Image: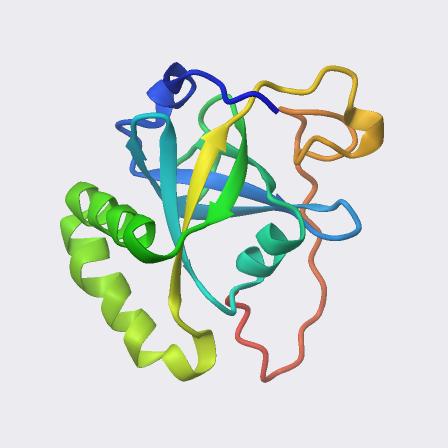
Length: 170
C-alpha cells in the first residue's frame, strides 16, 4: 500500500461532512457520516471509543471516504484509505485540526457530549486517514471497503427490528 499523493484529499479539503465506510467482519460495508479535517497528506476524523465504527476500524483499517451531505448522502467519488488510531501529540494535533475547521461543533458541542456520555461511550478517539492507491483486481480478496463489487458500487443498507431499549446510535 503506497501512500497516494495529497491531491487525493483535495476534493475533501473544503468538505465539512464525509461518508466514512468501514467493513464488518463479514465484509458488509457500513457507511457513517462524520466531520473531516484535511491537513497535508492526511484526513482526520473523530469518534468515541465504544462506537461500532471504532471497533470495525480496529478489525479492518481499510476504509473509503466520500464527500457527502450533512445527512450522509454521498456527493462525490470515494477515496480509499487506511485508518490509524492516534495517541499523544498526534491525537491533540488531529483534535486541533477539527476544531479549526469546525469551531462550534468540534470546539464545544462534540467534546461536551463525549464528556457527558463518557461512561456509555468511552473516551474520544481520533483517526488519521492516509489515502492509498486502489488495489487492482483485489475485489475477490475483499480488499475494497465498498464490498465485493468494488469501489464506487452502491451500498445496500438493510434494516432489522431492534429491541425497544436499543437507541440505534453507534
